Length: 363
Image 1: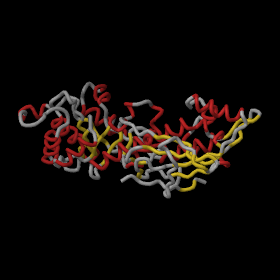
Image 2: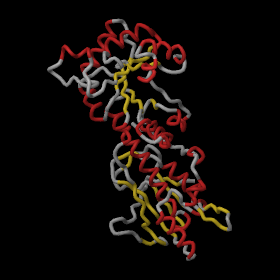
Image 3: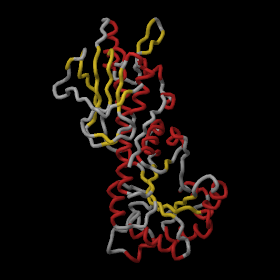
Image 4: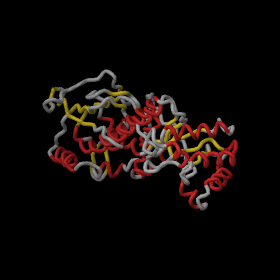
């Protein structure tokens, strides 16, 4: 289950480009123009704005959204920024909270001209982080307590890593692959002996694994990809024999277009391509028979919540799942609406005020 984070992250954690956010650089132009118009006309409407989304989901990005309001609400006067945070009343749920469709997750009350330019930024934070949390929580639940390694870094822009990694962590992922993804809780990235290093050692998985372990076994769990030669059973055994107690696990990552050599004599009764249940069973049986019962098996390559659930229902002897691009796909959009003006109802039809007793004041 995702962990509710009761203590909010400080704004400094997010390293926000504060000056540019204040200037509206990352905001939809119409919100920037709205702020400019209200200021030019001397209008200071006191509003209550509420934020919601439309899924059974998990709330992420709320501390980042609050940080945007804390540091970037306000106005420029004579070339000097005057903070508007003290004039706002903000109530919000917490990181990792389960949320229902159309449940209000945050309200902002105060002079709308102080924060009109920020809607694009804080809604984007909520949408991205909640999407990651929801997706990770689904695969964590499907894995029934087994470890999930969060491996989508190579599938998206590097700038999203920090917040995405935090969201994955809160949602239950055991490990992330980059230091940036682990930075908000002070962790470190983890990984395996990669195909590229094996290639750099002439395709010799054992040699690459030995050299990797010689340098790093005191710092990380040594996990080795064993599909470079498309013979996962034989390669896993050679690696285990070479590394002994230094080997934490082997990782199966066979392409969905290939059939591992160990399965060629068994084809006909199951789908033999990619990382399939029978391949995992054969690697596990071979390791156990050779006395390497402690070596873990990590599987990766196109895993989704549904595929993990299938493996678990079949009792496939997997110890951990490496999941990549499926964790960053989909949408979890948020909407913000002004619902009260000067304390009186003033909302778009169908978007009335929906108070939520779960919201807590943000100090």
